[in-house]
Amino acid sequence: MIKKFADDTKVGRMDDSEEESLLSVNTDHHLNQTVDKQTMKMSQCFPFIKMEREVGELSPLIVKEARLNNGEMVLAMWSRCPQADGAETESDLQQERNSQQHRHQEVNKVNGCIKYVMFLFNFMFTVLGYLMLAIGVWGLIDKESLDMDKINNLSTDPMLVFVVVGLVVGTMSFAGCVGALRENQCLLKFFTVGILIFVTVEMVGGIVIYVLRDRIEQYLENGMILGVKRYQDDPDLRFIMNEIQKGLKCCGVESYHDWELNLYFNCSSPGVHACGAPASCCINPQENGTVLNSQCGFGTLHMEEVTAQNYIYLRGCMLRLTSWFNSNVGSIGAFGVILMVIQVLGLIFATKVLSDIELIKAHW
Image 1: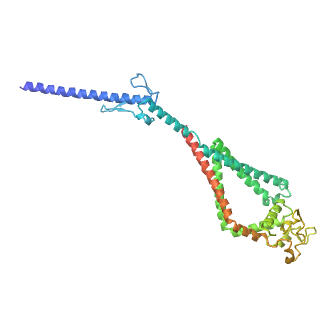
Image 2: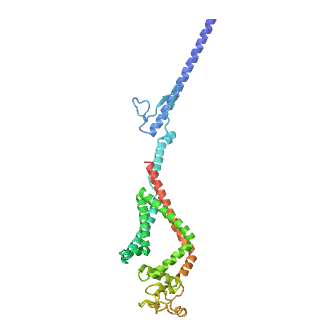
Image 3: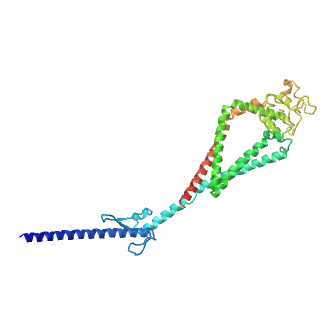
């Protein structure tokens, strides 16, 4: 009886062992199938990956098996082709490849609309800037302002403003134009820094003008007095004073008597212009509406105001100029805002092109 019980126990243990062995074989078989399936999927995604059963392959790119201390089989997971995890057919794989290629093409180019709009606007400002520069240089050469006997008055020459503004605007716009067309980071960064400086200076200048408007009015008055004194010596100042007096219908700075400050129009002058005023001060400078009478203001400074008002304007230009600024402050502000918006748009476009270039370089 005891022997028979021992034999039955032994048989039971053998059945349990066989069952465990069979379970282990099934698990290994299932894991091997999983490994083969994952390896096949990876080989479809990456052609250079070979099957595990190929002997002698030592490439680190192959999907390998690893066995932990407890004997459990694991797979090395790949993250470079997540789109292929569910791609079981050739058409799915082709769609994945086309999608990746399309995204790659999108990354490898700069936004064409922004690029060519930036190029066009900067090209126009480049032409405008260099045209101003050419006018300024021509004016300085024509007036011989660079000669040694006239170089001291160069700082008050209006043509110098054309030269400086034209050079700065032309150079900055040229950098933005070529930088956008050639996708040059160096030129685009130079353009961006320049625009930032421009915007900052304009904002600070606007605040300073508003805060110091009374002092600036005094500076403007001093500039007009300088124009009266140098009326005959500087063609540019003469042109500016003539346009102001004809446009605002005024004469002199405070009154028509300011022309006595001029060496040629002073009553003590021996010339033909003595005790007179320029033709731009005259109410009707044209005889018969066709011919300009350049002597219409001669002798008006020693006349009484009642008599002189029949020939020239008596009120000075400073009061008229101040009134004109006050009445057109809205238009001047709108022009400043439009100029600021154009510069900010140029800054945004340049930043966008730079970011696209950096994104392209990141995917090289």
